[in-house]
Length: 475
Image (cartoon, rainbow, N blue to C red; front, side, top):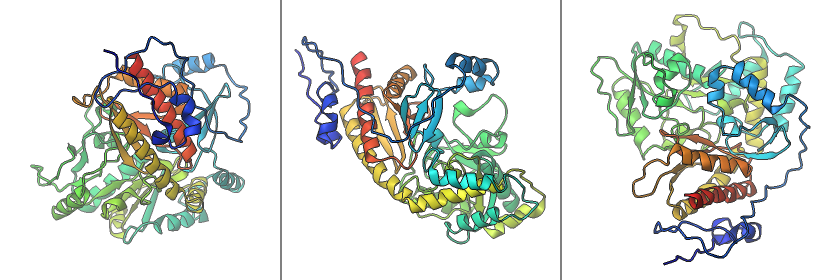
């Protein structure tokens, strides 16, 4: 018996009937009962691809090396790891970017929903930030903290003002890995203890110390790296290590691990238990900070907790290399037991860029946009979850979103890597760049520059719907 294939009604999914009618007319969907629509004997024309929203910016024509030459150099002169992490069977060759858009060397435009791995906070080459960078480049590129220059002090004051007391002391680094290394060092110096607790599936950086904090197997090497680090599951946690050492937990960033949020009161209860044992709490805000979650500027604020230390990077300077650790004066004083020097941390150019990013977030209401567009995306993606058997979960907050793919909703087994790759590639070929994450690489990560619009969201929704539908038909 043939099942009749129903039409996907534009208003219910996308809210804009006129734009999506061309797609709507030809899609067939996987119904809630798990029965695939069988192909009709009537031949239909191929799906009409979604139209990318307009953009007035004109990129400069690419006049560099050929794509073949670029790949040859990448293969032979770059570390093999560079090639290993290259996305897509047919890689994207990026030439230029502007706000939420990227152009490849052939002039094709893509909607960037991964933001250089959750790093471009206010848009590629944001005009305000670019102007600030150019102004500082003409004045002073680099000097170090052995001298006093206004950019560091001005930015430190501005950044500290965004934290509640007593989190008012800042130390600048060049990356999130450096920031997390430094936070652990400060914590150990302050408490006199050694052990650190992180969560299963977490990612805290790629340095030797940070890989110890990280418990995602893909980022671990077959050499000892734990150095006192212990990984636990996301359950009510008590410090029950057999040693006499007290411990400090690092909250699980909701990024690489698949946009997993904490259960209600999890952080509050964890902080209380750890502090009862004499530990301190570190919030890794490398991906969640600077308004990305929409409701709050910092992720920890959404859980009604106050950490002892906060680490940050990525969106802090919109892609310019920078990181920071913010802590209390008491903990910071413990750092004076030795001498620590960072050549590039907090240099004039980095501070000027980061200061402009903070101004732009406020002036352009970027956090509010993250809340509005993020909520819209989550709502519409939830409709796709209800429609397709292979979309197991949609979760996140603001513009920090994960879409978990499964074989079916009954088993909830991860969708195999080759299937993920098909949908991933198809989405790219239709003009949208997204990321991947999760314990098994089964979660699509939607974490764009926070300047995207609802029109951009509608375009992605149509593309993703079509990519999933294409896979379902092939399956």
